Each structure stands twice: as C-alpha cells, then as structure tokens.
Length: 297
Image (cartoon, rainbow, N blue to C red; front, top):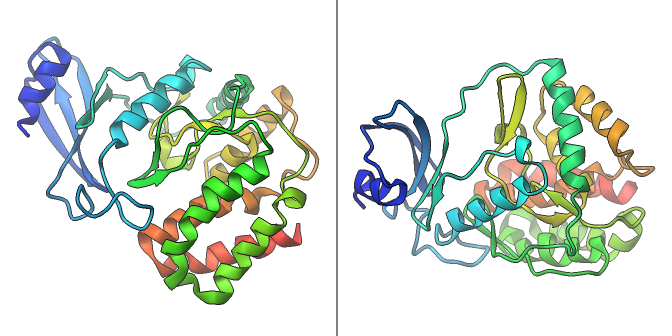
C-alpha cells in the first residue's frame, strides 16, 4: 500500500512527511506532518508481518482484518459516553487509523483524580447490553462481542474466558485448564452483586492511557458493554501511576459494590488469558495465581 497516497484520499489533503515510529502486532506506527502544521498519529496495516492476514482468524491465530474498524467503532462509542476522555478518530478504514498527535507528560496526582472522575462518568453511560454491535478485537485476537441482557458472569465466562482456553491449553496443561473451568463453573457465585452493563474500555492498562495537558486520554480500546470493575482491575494489573488517587476519585462519584477488591483477580483472568495466547508461558503463573485468588474470593 502507498501509505501517503492512501492518507491523502482519506484526509482530503496531502501529507508532507511520514515519520516511522516502529511497529506493534500487525501494524506500523507513524507520525504524519500536514502542510498546515498539524501532526497526526497513524496506524497502518502491514500484510508482510508474520502476525498479519493469513495466519488465521480464530482465537488461536491472529489476523489484522477488522482491527481498525473495531478500534474506531470503540473509540467513537466511548466518546459518546465521555468525549473529553477519548481520542477522537480523524479517519479510518480497514487499513489505516488516524488520530490527533497527543503530546504526553508525566501524570500528576490531580490529573489522576480527574481521570478517576471521568472514568466513573464514562461507566455511568449505561448501554442496553453486555457486548457490542461490532466484532471486537484485543490486539490481533478476535473478541466475541455477542450482545446479551443476561447476567454479566455468564456472559464473561462464555465470551471472555471459554473461547481462549483451547488456544492456551498447550501452555496451561490439564490442571491449569481445570482451574479456569472451576472459575467458570462458579461464576454466578464469584461475580458479585448484579450490576447493569457499563460502557467500558476493555483493555485499560496504563499503556492505553495518554497523559497530557493535565488530563488523560484513552486509546486502543477493546470497548464493549461490560462490568465496570473490569476496567479498574486492568488498571491494577500492570500498574498505573497514582492508582490510589484514581480509585478514590472514582469511588466518590460511583461507589463500588462490597467485595470489589476481592474480585480484581476474576476480572484479570481474561487479559491474562490473552497474554498466554499471544506470548506464551511467561504469563502462565500470573494467570493461574489469579484464578486461585478468584476462587478463594
């Protein structure tokens, strides 16, 4: 693909210069400079990457088909809940995603508090269902976003845990698979008090939060109607600056149900399963420890 020409067709204006920023998964990253002085962030598919199209569209394989369409849909859907918290989509198709270039800075405690408040407001924009109306992705793995108005625990077990077990089986072994299955068998007890669906980011680790100009902006979502504790558990999984301040500000706006801290490992099972499928055995111990903690409650 001639990326400058493709961007010109999408944006309706030429690109002066494309600065390569490396690659991630099945796409390349660029900073685009426009004649009017604006700077944009560009993600572009690369079908020459071994993780790109042709490896397989199932959960056990990877594909870049539909990733940018899903990401753009998720960003726009999240922005409908809180536009100040989400990077705006400037252009997108199945080959390219274009966002504003967002300069970053070290987050302050005050910015973290504002983020906690904004995240609570986003979650309060309650959708009608768990799931979403578009096919989902997390990295290059498909997500089953089939909508449901039932209980969150059942939806989570069926659409966020069970689909990844076959691809993870060779890493987890029989005992590891059985441990996850025990969580799924007890999901009704472990899921906590019923809550309505929340408009969640779905992959809210610290790398998907850009801090700049005194506030946070969300990128790279796996957005869907889900449980709000999922986003908070993801913030804790790999560490987020000023997490205590974020959670305190969140709780002031939207108090969490009793026992939410004990349910953090349950909500971390899906992202850890994804990491096992994508990256192998280095995440096995974390996944099984989370499963054991979820069962211990």
